[in-house]
Length: 580
Image: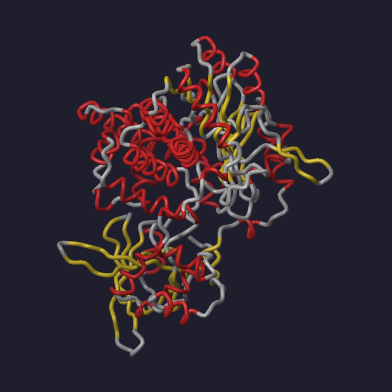
């Protein structure tokens, strides 16, 4: 809490939008704040369907990659998918394996082990593929930064198709950037400068979905696939699952894919996904972006963090219900262990920052004992706590340093790391997150140079709380809350709306437990009628209680929803920040 409050200042004729689309002026303003300007864009936001998904043929090298894969399937050569150990890599690998297998291909998957292999393609994976008689390697969610590795594979006589969504490595000369693409047979990545695909923000799972979709529709292979339509629905559900889990922005076609994908997941026939939903106690009717991001997804990621991601992939491929149930329970247990470890390392990192690096604009915390698979999560917690970019470093198995970073919107982490690229043995990522490897003893140098090169102030680096509408709480009605459902799915890039009111009368302040704070507040509607509201917070509750218990008024940033208890459903405010 304590972010800088700013009101979204986007202008439009909100009454006209409200009239044209049969919504309230409030909702019109919120939608305009999300980016849509034209009637067509607003209509797509409200009513976008699968026809708004972009044509996979627009992805550069798609036709070439499909042709190579079709020939490999027909010739019955050994194909190997090389994925990644996170939710996106697992889902992309699942889509490619099952899609190629159902088309008659001979295909298997190799997911790198985080500690043993590191991220993406490496020499050992390639030589193992060669020894196994693999003739075609298809990457997913990695490969764009693997120029040396793809060159090695091709020198051994293997064909390579790269499918990825990460930033393309580049070199900068004379102020101009030149992308460095791997010398593979085909390279599919929407972030290629020469790729005409209209939306750059899809994840690896969505790229895999597009690839199989094109393969089925534009080659003769698709005619051999039985139940193709149902299969593609399953793949769309997994692409949506990956989109949320990999924290892609829910805009453009991502919003459409996730909206439809959530419906498909609620009624999925995938045995493993059903087992995971049951093992976490998730109610299908409540399946949402939140459940994927904070309940289901972390169980998949825990597999790749603490053991190997094979367990997660095997779960999705499992067709025996009992085996799937047992496997899902193991993933849930792993995630609980991951949570406990994360909390311990986060607490230590916060103390280190407060004691030694409180004034740094880019936090670089070296904890050699931190489990390297948790570095990214801890970096995210630091970013949230201190409102600035954070990188957590730890020792790898060879005594060198590995790390993960998470950024704020104002700081391009990939560009920042690229400016000091001479320090790294390997790095990659995008604006908001990155992974890196560097020699032992380099942590202090990395910290010094990143901070020297950062021209943004702490205030500029910090996330701002963007208020959609300064709205008196008395205007929040059941009907208003229900109308906000039209904004779903909400998440990164399409956040739940944020409202604010100054000097709200406080009737009571309660602390039912150390993790729950309740305020009873007084609001007035447009006619001056008094309405009573309950507002809750689940963060810093004891401190908030001490600061608010004797206050007569409080200014709030809040979100709205329904709270259902004992069969009674009523409006509830969720406190996101406050000012005295």
